[in-house]
Every structure is written in C-alpha cells, then in structure tokens.
Image (cartoon, rainbow, N blue to C red; front, side, top):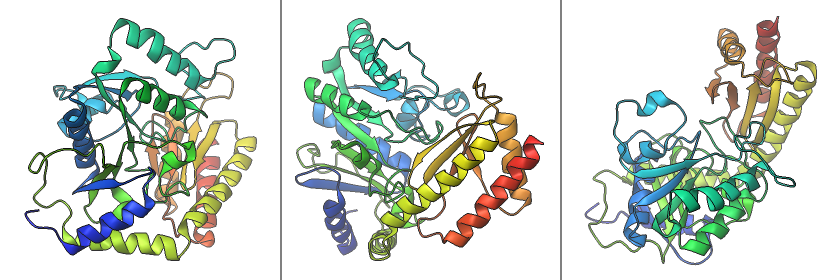
Length: 353
C-alpha cells in the first residue's frame, strides 16, 4: 500500500458508478469483512470526533475486537473478550418476533425508533455523542430478517438530526445478492459509509469501505493495510462486477429469488412448522417453529433438515437460532434451483415425519 496499483484506481472508479449515495465517494480496500467494519468504525470516530455507537441485537459484523463489540448474535462469539468500542444495542425491526410493545398504529420499526428517541436518548445516551449507527440492511446471522418498511428511512432522519453517520454493512447483502447492487437501495436511503467484502471478489480476500468524500477525511497514515487491496483480488473484483453486469445477474437474482420464495410459501401451506419465509433476491430465510400459534423456535427440526439435505447431496447453512438461509450463486441455473428445492422438500418431509 505504499504505492497505488492501477487495479485499485479502476475498481474505485467502477464502484463510484455503483455507489448507493450521490456525490463523490472515496474508497479503502482491506482483506475481509471484519476489516471493513473496523475501518468504518475508525473513520466514523475520526470524522465526527465521537466515540459512542449504536448497533442492533442479532447483528453480526465480525470477530475482531472493534467489530465484535457490535456483534450480538451468539454470546459464544464475544465470551471472554473485552469490549473494544462502546456500543448501545437496540432491537432490530423483526416483525415476526417483536421485542418491544407497540402503541396503537405502530409497526415494529416505529416502536424501535420511538424507543431510541424517547428512552435511550432520554435516559442513557446523548445523541450528539454518537458517531454512527451500524446497520445490516438485511440482518444476516440474526436470521435473514428484512426490516419493516420505513424503518431505515427513520434511522436516516435521526442521523441527519443529530449529525450521526449511517453505516450500511453490505458484506453479506451487497454486490447483487438481493437483486440490487446494495440492499440498502431497497429502502431508498443513502448511507454515509458502506462496508463490502465476501462476494465482491468471488472468494478472493478483499473487503473495504466506500464513503462520501465529505466523510472520508482522515489524513495519510491514519489507516492502512499491508496486503489490503492486493492486485490479484482487485482484478477478481473487477471481473466479478463485469460478469454481474454483462450477464444480467441482478435481474436473475431478483427473478430466481422470487421463484424460490414462491416454492417455499407453497411448502409453508403444507407444513405449519414453517413459521415465515422472508428475504430479497437470493438472500432468503426460512424460519422453523413448533407451531404457527406459539411461534416457539424449532432448532431441532431446522438442524435435522440440514442433516437430511447433506445426506442427499445439498449443503445448507443455518442463521439465527432456527432459520435456514438460501444463498445460491447469483448465476445458478433454474435446473439446479429445482434440484436443490426438491432435496430441501424431501429433507423437510422426512424431518417432520
């Protein structure tokens, strides 16, 4: 990083065309998702001069000390480690499982925004001490939870009111996963900083942040990485973005995701142990319960389905206590989708039986 690779300039120029914020943007390239979050947190502190943050229960942002301070999906991930950053966690707008009481006419998101304003800001946290709010526009490890309509816009309003930065963690949801380049685009909201990694280089180690030019104000040497943005990973990212564009994979992700959700909802009508099907594009979650009335989490059934799928030749991974996530490649063929869904249905039938 003592010198700039041509690929770094090319990738920054390309991402500038795809950025979910208007105006000029600046870029930092690292090696991974957790490095991207650390960079965003450091930049927010540097730019605002503030040291407190707001995160969300159920969130996963990484395992290094700063990002781990925001991670709140499993206690084992943070057990025995000190807090690196002062973070105040609030509920995520999880409509299927609301944590806060709702007033008349409120949805889950509105109740959380009210709690933030009327309780947390009144009793515990001075809003002008907050550097940033770190948000997953679709919560990943927490269960593939899609926020209620208007919630992210409400956060943006609070951020604008108090000079707080809004950071969108797109490490899992970005680069076309949801049928748009960035999941926050579904909300019609512009973030101040975006974290990206995972799919950006199709498996090669690359992560980073994009930020509004007015926000990325740190001086040379304030942050850096020896191997971050190596030329091989940068070339892979450029090729990945080109393939997504030229092969129309945004639209394909949208269409394939709708097809998957339709199939899963048909299964839901047959199997009431499917509590909810949710997601956007090829970021789909299926939550399992003991029954539709109690909504009691059914992790045993979820795990049996994953095992049954494995025995039949399909790999599935969990998220949250009782959800299976569907995240196939953006370019997956319809034939492979049908094969995978058939295996899932067989594994579900056997597990229920």
